[in-house]
Image: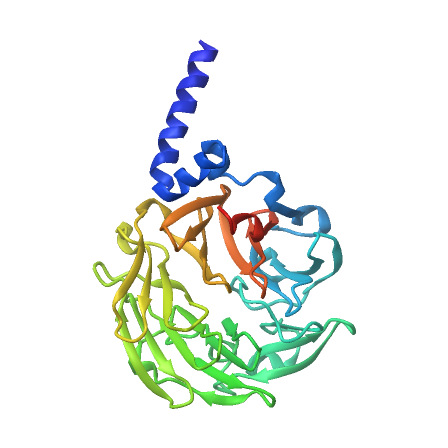
Length: 376
C-alpha cells in the first residue's frame, strides 16, 4: 500500500510538472538527462546560502522578512524583519555582519522598502524616534557608524507622518533617482534627485487617485504608478508628463500590488495583490509595452494571487515573483516557469549583476545562484 501511494503521489506530481513547465523547458531537462523534479525544484548547487532569520536575534517577535536589498557591489545584503523593527546586514555567503533593533518604532505598518545608496549608506523609512521623523520620508543610515546620517524631507512637511513617511520607495540603477509612496490617503508620490535629494517631480494624484505601487526605470527617466483600480500610469520624469495610462487589471478592478521595469525601460511587469470582494484575476501577472500600452506576455495562473513582490532580472531573461504559495521564476524566452521556493514569500531582490537572487519568507532568506539557471 505504501508503494502504491508513493507511485500515485509521484504520478500526480509529474502531472503537475507537465502543467507547470513549458515544452521548451521540459525538452531541455530531458535532453540534459535531468529529472522532471530537478527541472521544477532547484538542486542544492543553485542555492548559495540560506539565512535563518530567527536564529540571529532571539528578540524577534516575528522573523517574517518583508524587505531585502543588495549593495551596489553585490557583496552585501540587507534584510527587514519583524515588520521593520529589525534590520540585518549579511555577506553574500550568508554570514551575518551586523544587526540592530529599532526599539522606538511607533509607526504602525509593516516596513517593506529597504535599499542601498552606496556600499556604506542604507536607506530605510524613519523609525519614529526623532522629532525629524514626522516630516521625513527616508533615513540614510551610515553602516560604519551605525547612526542616521541624514533624513530626506517628505512631500508635505507639517502634515504628520502619514503624509511624509515612505510606505514604499524605489531607486534607479545608479542611485541618482529616488521615488517614494506615502501612507496617507490619497497616497503622495514624490521623485527626488541626487545629490541634494530635492524634489524633482510630484505627479498629480488626479491621474491615479491613490497609489498602491511604484517603480522607476533603470535609467531613472520613467516613473510607473499603480493604483487600486487596476491602472498603471507612466510618466516621463524630466518632462513631468504623463505618457501612458495602462488598464492593467480593470475587469474586475484589482489593486496593482507591485511593478518592475524591464532593464531597457521599454516594458514593465505588473501584478495584483489581494482580490477585492474575493474576486480573483485570471491573469494576475503580465507585461506591458510602454510605447503603446499594449499587453505583452502573460503568466495565467490564477492560483498565485496575491503576488507580493515582482522583479525583472537586470539581465532581462527572467522575472521573479513572490506569492503566498512561494517564489517562482518566469523565463521570458519560452514563457516557462521554475519554482524556487514553496513557502509563502514576501520579498525579492536581484543582485545588480543579476547573478544572485535573494528571496525572503516567513523565517528565512535564500540566496539563489542565478548563473545555474542561465543554461536551462
